Length: 414
Ligand code: PMP
Image 1 (cartoon, rainbow, N blue to C red):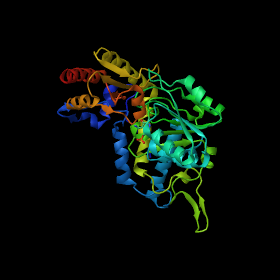
Image 2: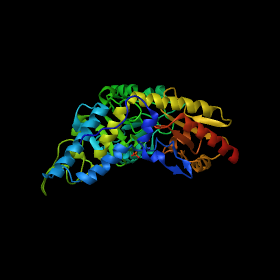
Image 3: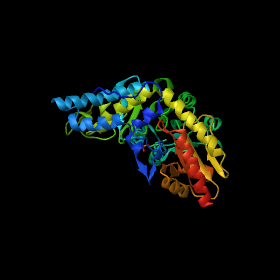
Image 4: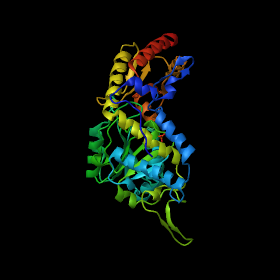
């Protein structure tokens, strides 16, 4: 399927905003200001068009059909796989597995690779800034296998303590699973160093790229991670599509995840053989419409250019950080040297949720709470934060409106 973005060349914020119909809507009588991009991004028109084009023109189940519609749907599905492979610079298309999100991607590794490779007394290393989806699957696995989950600490700035990491890693470490970019703090972790040290100790590495894939250039081959997981809904794509990248030789040696149609070669009551990669891990009818629309999201990103996107987001981050620091009693949680456009903060004596409600009354969507990182909140001794996260379509004018509304809310609640 040919998809064109319609995006003008060069970085034109007005043009970019026009591609997002939702930005035209009002919330509580005010123009929507959407600062919850770390939770999910909004979708450009080409992604919406790709969804309706699939259902309106070539809706069919894939891989099994020989009729025209099935062939078209299959071709579009497999083209998205190729586009994802290019996007993260994987060596082989078989290394790209479609799941329903980062959560399922991590669970797939825990339930297949984990159960086949983790034994009594082994250690799994994660960090104190992990999302629950990169904690709980390993807790379940460790409990089942009598293995040990060890935690890399986080310093006061919200960065990983790399010296502590070096001490934690040993020949007992079988897996290191860390987040590339923290959803709660915005910290960019030094994953290349983490991976190199883990490999020296003989451990396998999973990188949770849920927050990094949209902001950073991802090159899994250069990074040398064994697994990389992310969700397309944070990259202007539809919900319900996740990616698991895995090195081919590791995936080939893993047992399947779910059993059913699509993932088999032959089924007999006395013996079943499995399909080759990547289909071994894609049981059942996949999320065809949403996967196919993901290609449009990648075309959109490509047309803007990651470098332009990052530059714009970094400008917003610097501007917002400067403005928020001027507010008395406001403390930014997470001041890492290397950050993406995420700002978490607390305000003395005010509950984050109360601020969130008042901001919503001004049409401003921010996230409040623990951001599925309760152990990180415990580390900082707080119940949660207010989190503003910026995307390519946000503006400094929106930040001005946000800061004004925030000051007003603080005054009301103080
Ligand atoms: N890891 C991180 C760092 C995240 O930010 C998220 C989503 N908030 C996830 C994992 C889980 O992603 P999903 O809900 O799309 O499976």
